[in-house]
Structure formats: C-alpha cells, structure tokens
Image 1 (cartoon, helix red, strand yellow):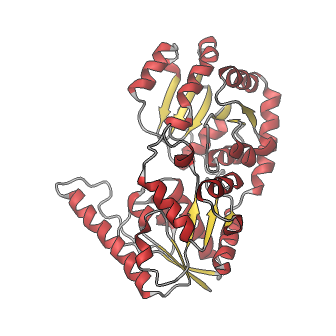
Image 2 (tube, rainbow, N blue to C red):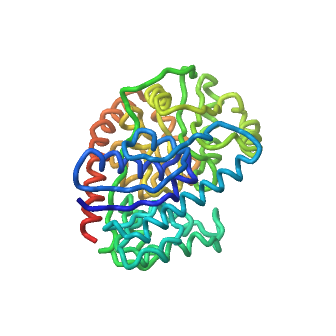
Image 3 (cartoon, rainbow, N blue to C red):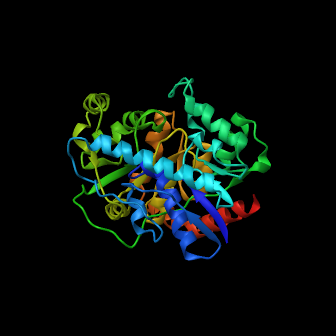
Amino acid sequence: MTKVLFDDQIFTGQKIGGISRYFSQLFKEFEKGDVIDYKLPLMYSENIYLKDLKKNRSYAFLEGKKFKGRDRLLNFFRKINRQSSKICLSAGRFDVFHPTDYDPYFLDYLNNKPFVITIYDMIHEIYAGEFFDANDSSLLRKRLLAEKAAKIIAISQNTKNDIIKFCGINESKVSVIYLANSLDVNLSIPIAVPEKFLLFVGSRGRYKNFNFFIESISPILQKDRRLNVICVGGSDFTSEEELLFVRTGVRDQVLRYIVSDSQLVYLYKKALAFVFPTLYEGFGLPMVEAAACGCPVIASNCEVLKEVGQDAALYFDGRDCDSILQVVSQVIENENLRSDLISKGIVHVKNFSWAESARETANVYRGV
C-alpha cells in the first residue's frame, strides 16, 4: 500500500467548507480499499466531515462551549496539531505528503520526500487588484508550492490552464481530477419554503456576482410577487445588499436560509432552478449537486462552468443584465425546458464520482 501523509491545516481552521469536504471524501474512499494507507495527525478539530471517518482520532470536546479562556485553549490545540504534523513529517514514515492548504511550513521537514498539492482555482491571481489584494502573500505561497511539488492536482481543465499560465508550470506536471456530489439525494428533510423560488448557494461577495444577479432579475420578481430567491450559505445580508433589495423593490422576496445537507437536498428538489451567476470558479460543485438532486441549472457562461455543466445547463452572460433576465425568465416560464434540463442533468452527473476521483488521486501518488 502507498502510505500518504496529510496535515492539520484545513481541519484545524475549517468546521465546514469545500476543501475539508474534498479531503474527507477522499479519505472515505481510501478507507474502502487497500491501495492507500493515509494518516491525518490531528488532536483537536471541530470539522463535521471527520466524524464519519474510521481513522479519525481527533476530538471536538469544546465544540459549542463558551467560557473565558476558550480562545487561548483553542490556540494551544492548534499548536499541538501543527506539532503533530511536524513530528510525522520528520519521522518520514510515508511515501507521499499531501498538504491540505498552502502554508509552506512543511518544506523544512520533508527530508526529500515528494509532495502533491491540490490547487482549486486561481481566483486571487485572476482578480488581483479588482476583488483581491494584488500583494497578498498567499499568491506567493501558492506559486512556491506549485513550483516545488512533485505533482499538482487541478480540479478542472480550466484551473489547469490557469495554473500553467500564472505559475509557468509544465502541463505534464498537472493532473485534472474532478470533484463529485457529496449530498445523499435520497435523504431530503422538508422545511418551510415559499411555493416558487430560485436557489442561490454559497458566498455572495465579489466575483460571485450576486448583487448584479439580483439587479438583473428584479423585473421578474416585481412582476411576480410569489417568486422568491432563497440564499443558502454565506454570511448575513450586508447593509449594501439590504439597500439593493429595497432600491429594487424586492426586499421581502430575497431570503437567507441556514440548512443541513439533507435540507439543502430538499431545497434543490423544490426550486424552480438553481442559478449560478459567478464570474469564475475552480470547478462549480453546486452545479453537480443541483443536477444530482434533479434541479434545473442556470449558470454564467464562464469557461469552467461550461466545462463542468456541458449541455446539462443553460447559460447566460454574467456581465450582461439582459442576458441574465432573458435566460432566467425562459426557464421559469417553460416547464418543458425545466424538465429537459433535469433529465440531462441526472444523466450528466453520472460522470462525476468520488470513487473515480480517489482512484485517479491514488494513481498520482503512486506516480511520484
């Protein structure tokens, strides 16, 4: 068996989120077979995805507890987690190391062992100076690790192209391995929702293009007061967003829900459509989730979303108000079109599998 060491980075800092879910899904698949023997040195973590793993040895005994000195104690546990990673790195009892984030601390402890890095997107590089600080040190760290890694995993061909462009990496060094749906589509817990709604999933700021999306579809919402937009994930609505809702006359029709995975499945199943107006993504996982749940998908026509969605989604120009309005109206008003998108999505989503992702990832480990 190939022995692969992971580290504490993302699991120390993330309770829920796409990156920690990605690694946890790989761990689940590795536990089913006898190809990869993985180790995750972790003493304390509140990450929810670790709870179902057989090899998880972390504890979350402070979760939900508030008391004086809690932050100081958590900081102590973070240091213990990092020290555990360093000890395992120095011991060298592994074939390949796979860091779970971009902190290059581990370079001093590898002792010439190879490492693989997963790069999810190049959003900070593409929008440096527009949505992100052009002098952000994370850009330098990511590039450093891309240069020193034995192999890079990109989660889409579009991301691979961006890595090559911004890091000057030889294309043979980058393997494209897609993500997959993690939701149990058969586990759907009902919650109170409006009769008619469009679904928006994820954070809403900057390149996510949420404000422009609401501005664009406000004529539809004004025309049909029964129609709503439900937002899942992200933080509370900002004052800027609240002012936008009032100015466009749709304040009572834009709602924010905090839901579990099984409740999210219900929302996907009940929505008229899932709308993804983002200007850029590394992959676009909510498109796959929506399709798996039988929800029509509408998305911006950025290259990666067309790569992932193929003909199982309908696309608009994310920077064109009229384009967004026209496509969203078309899907809302045409039941046959929605049915066609649902059918295509259910077929297309079969191309994405965590078992296949884990198999291809194992091949990358063995290759280095």
